[in-house]
Length: 299
Image (cartoon, rainbow, N blue to C red):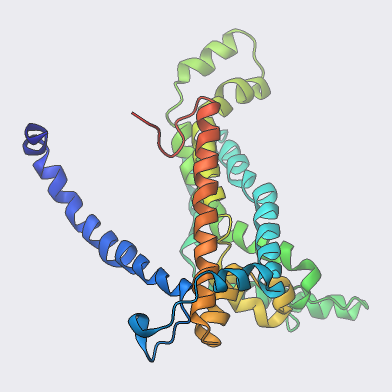
């Protein structure tokens, strides 16, 4: 072991800043989760706050507002998993079929650009296009159609998914294009010699090459299933109401920071973290069953 440490001392030294950052900003703050078992008050501190055992967790699971936030979170996650997750894959396949590299690079750059926009800018752009003061709204109102996409709770799910696609689909395209660049061209040539059509080459060569990346991103997406965009939703919560826009993260924020019920919010956040961890472990185990490496595998 010491010989390996001496051999890899330069690499190990490079990891020290990351380890320090994780320890200070991720692992040390986890000790604060103790307030989930307390009636915590910031005025008396963690040491002097009374211990209430599992009372806060009982409140979490019996609170109808929290259960509504869980329902909205799972609904948004499932909807985006079906209608958002496949879009970068499809766009990457389309871009990969473009022969001219200049056209491919131009389209990729245009699609990737919104990834650098903040959610404030994204929501503002959609407000200018689809809001009540937009030109589109005035044209529709002139024809007797009164419809405001930005304030309608019934279409809020479609709205936030459209915003996520416009903002983040370009990031997924880059990942899948990088995976496609590793495919051996000889495989396509052999498939052409065997008489395979473009559709069959995509099915038997391209998609199998993408499968490990797809499964890895799917595992990470499932692990992030209970986190569906705090900033995006809190910016639009007032317009559509908490009934449609309240998710676990916004609920924890309003209960903990705004209402000052720190212990209840900590218990709700801890439940979310544990469930997210179980989703990652379960999805990773399922990936091993299908013969993929997943996020990690035992040596």
